[in-house]
Length: 177
Image (cartoon, rainbow, N blue to C red; front, side, top):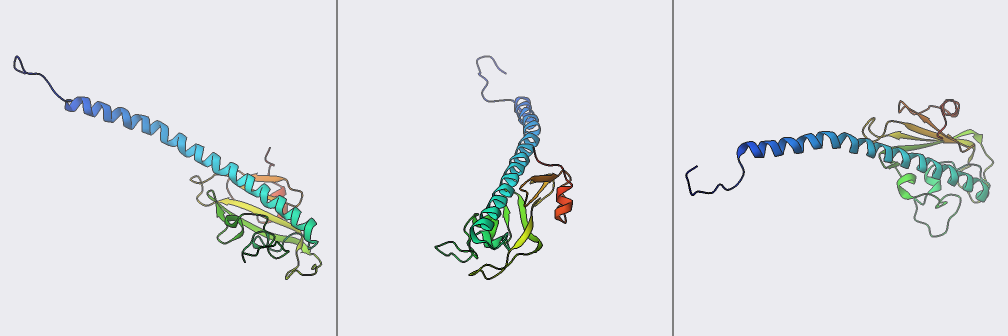
């Protein structure tokens, strides 16, 4: 530099150092953000399983048709104004309409333990039992654990993310504390 001239701007080395520092901070922060997102999705999945379980019990006691025949029965797929045993309006549309996805999880519902006697006004009989499951849409990205529950309303989880095939397989898993 000549005498009397002032230096303006940043040198290439200074810019490279700043970029390197930003990349290091991003490399540390991004995995923590992903783990936080997975934990939030898992908490939401467990809560949605609890919501579906509670709705199934309310359906059973309100309509006398056993536990609901389908997950759609707990929602309002036909847009009715007044709830009935075919459109109970007990859960939100994301959980009661295909593809049954919410917060990085796919939900499934199956009746079990035999068909209950069909109540008057219902188009399909309910069941004496049920199994509801939540499985990560993308393993280790949207969640790591799968969740399930049945009529005792205890939520169980599978740390490998595999969906239990039956009520017995669900009840053999550890319970969420």
